[in-house]
Amino acid sequence: MSAARAESHNRALDGLRGFAVLLVFLVHAAGNTAFVVWGLDLQGASFASLTSHTQRFVFWLYRSHHGVFLFFVLSGYLIGRMWLAPDAMRYGRFAWRRTLRIYPAFVVAFAASLLFAYASGTWTPPDWPRVAGNLLFLNGAPASGVAPFNIVTWSLFYEMTFYLAFPLLVMAIRNRTAVAVLGLCAPVVAVAAGVDTLALCWSLLFAGVSVAFGRDA
Image (spheres, rainbow, N blue to C red):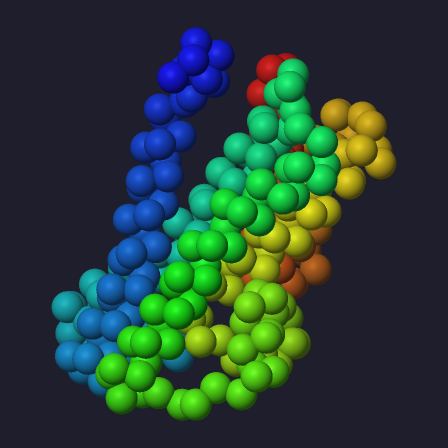
């Protein structure tokens, strides 16, 4: 690792990322456990409706959605620092490298989800519009009507639209302070407007950018 890269690496962020991974894992593990063991759908359940301490503990783990929020802030922060680097790449190369970083792994996971559905007996022969919609990440887009094959890939729609839009925003405004203020305002406006959790997550990417742009100050 070069001296510049070592200097820019922040081990504390690795710890935060690991904590976020744990929270995300707990959400899915607790939800699946409740469904398999008790036949409970925790998405529509409430704490008071549960009948045992064990169920309530699992429900508490299921509600650990803060890991997703933390991931989005971290992603925005890291992309913001990348864009602020002295040798920051051009927009076209930036967008291309982000796509190469995400899309090949996504295609592998997408194929694996289809194979798993087939092997587990939950297979429904897919139609081509649904396949195309998932390959374009539209299963995560609000009101798109595209049913997901792998539901956890919803975040990729928001990540990719952020990767494409954020650099254009920075180049258009050309004022780091203004970008930082807008980034801080984004989640506040989202909450005040009562947007859904997905739109709130997208706003948190810009909040992460705000932290990155204000780090030196």
